[in-house]
Amino acid sequence: MVEKMNKVETGFGKKGWILIIYCLITFYVCTAFKDTMNVAVYTFQEKYGWSQTLLLSLASIGSYVTCIVIYILGILNATGKLKLRNVALITGLIYACTISLWGLIHSLGIFIVNYIVMTVGYTVWSQYANNSICANWFPKKSGAVLGWTTIGFPLAAATNALLFMTLMKHMTFEKVYLLFGILTLFVCIWGYFGFRDYPEEMGYHPDNDTSMTQDKIKEFLEQEDGISKSSIWTTSRMLATKETWFISISNGVMLLLASGSMGQMVVRFVSGGMELEMAIKMMTVVGIFAMVGSWAFGKYDYRAGVKKAVLLGIVMMFVACGLYSINSFVPMVVGAAIIGAGLGGSSNFVVSCTSYYWKRKNFKKAYGTILTITTVIGSAGALVVANLANVFNYSVAYWLLMVLAAIAFLCMLFVKEGFVERYEEQLSKI
Image (cartoon, rainbow, N blue to C red; front, side, top):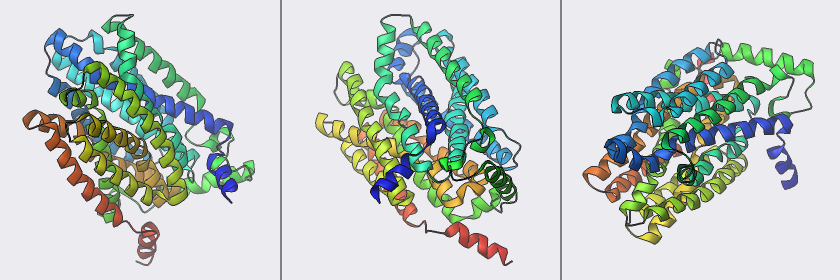
């Protein structure tokens, strides 16, 4: 039985594995390059006198603008008029251009605008367009697939600081970010020409189910497209459904915990008395734990179910924040390692929850709403931690995160199995 489950879980097919590798690399370039702010913040302050607190808060500001864009894209995607691969291409190009300008901008105002546009680009590309494509290709295996693709997040956390410091020894600050832009451009173009929105469009099978004939695949795609367009799950109905909020709050708080912790980890370690060089090395250790966490949570999601996986992830983040609030080497390191493992899992859950509860036929209409609310909440992470640490200290910031984690845990407990089907049945009787 276990052997059969393992075969089903990892039977993604050759093209499926190529898609997974592409998405993993996309997550890496979208996270590693922009998260060099962890270390580059010192260079910006030295060169231009820019505030560290302001620079570390820009991620939150940019994410709020991104929420508006994702909400609009969700509405357009629900109509069936939006091509996800076109969205991925455009936003990938935006990210490539804006990241390459980091070292060339000397005006703080222009840099802020550039950063906000960049945030829209990398978030929509990696988390909206690519994740939606993955859900279309693997509607029943999305949790397991995302367990692999989101390894790109912790891999970036493990290497971005070292990557930046190594490159800075061989080239100028300006050329480092030009290189990042060029590498991003290649990944973006590869994705556009390598994949389509649905596997059926390229002659492949959803979930790599090779038992389906090509005629059956075509019929299945046409039927599901019709069901998707006539889905009852409008934006207003999504917002009126309490489970939408429970799921979004749970995932949003996990994103908030992850972004509030990982995005400022080097600065946190230094504030706790750690040397900068050691703090950068610790990012690698945390990243390794996060990679294992991403894979393990994907596996656990597939076997035990997404609800149990989310609850476990929240508990881990709660414990980690408690340890991370202590200004002592051992608790901070242990807490950071747990945060890393939790981060690896939290990256999977937005798509996995939407795909599991609303299924592929409703995914287009549900995902935009879920992701928008999740991003609104999660985007506050960097802003909350940076400003609380500035006004009080990092310990106070992480005590607050523990309270939020407890709220998120309760919200996920209230999500009951089969609520989508029950709502649909009730509406069909009206």
